[in-house]
Length: 442
Image: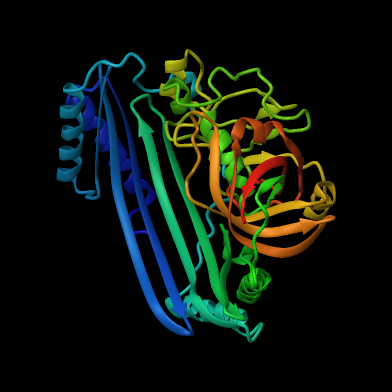
């Protein structure tokens, strides 16, 4: 599975730290990794791609006083390792002093490196992966005569291991697996052509949805989109389906992240302790969920992660901070160097149907297009497609519409959250109902 042993990775990290110290660094951190992957793709039952990859690399950060230098290499030879450390040291000497740079305070480093059950190696061969992909696509194509084409089905696997270490004596080994399968189906009826997809990704092959299930779901989704119409421009309730609702929480996390906050490029600057969502909204960060995605016992700096409530009763309880951004803001790191960990949004109702009854008449958004989100002002405008709802029941599919608003208003106008989050998603976020947004259609 791997070319390098666990001990090899620790030795590479130890050597890099030694070279950094010998070169005059006051502190250093190194990340050594190896990953392998297999990806196959079929279209109309013909194999289009079989790709195998193996990546290795070393990333080195050094600190000389308050100056920082960074360099990386894909070559693990001793000579390349020495050259990479030297490059980082040379870069550091030419950078400006930054009072906030440096390694984390030792007391914040993780001391309990417990197992999150993220590593489940499998001996899947390319032939087996191709067979799965064909089965998945065939399940979609055989559902209905209106499904006339396919953009293909893909099966992939990724296995990785890494060692992160720094000159404070911290060293941690991590290994994880990821398996995924997807299918994109194309359907046509009365001159209307639509595409839609379904996918699943898990840590273990045994937990992956079956090829038949993924293909059939892709077929059902694309058939539901046929003969799409539009809606009259106006202001309506908008329900963000679980396939897109995570983006609303991603924007929230982005606005509460340290980089945006200290640069004053967030509409949520100085929001700690302030109410930005309704009383019933609770958002937690759960970095220790077993077999999940976006989880870790320590962040990219070795700082221990902790389960915590980010939003409670609609009030901001914390930001997402690395050591550097925390120092810039005069706060304490939250263990988010490298990004946000698994977020869980507390539901208020059992199903999406409950939200539809609550909404009455309005729009379900199942797909978003474009990048019209400004985290500085909160302005939000994106292309969308989905379904028009009347009296709590889906009436017909819609496309080529635009939804717009301000994130500040959208968060304040959350009416409900369904308990329908996808099981294997990076974050646990169900469908979200917003009281009103501007919908541009006909």
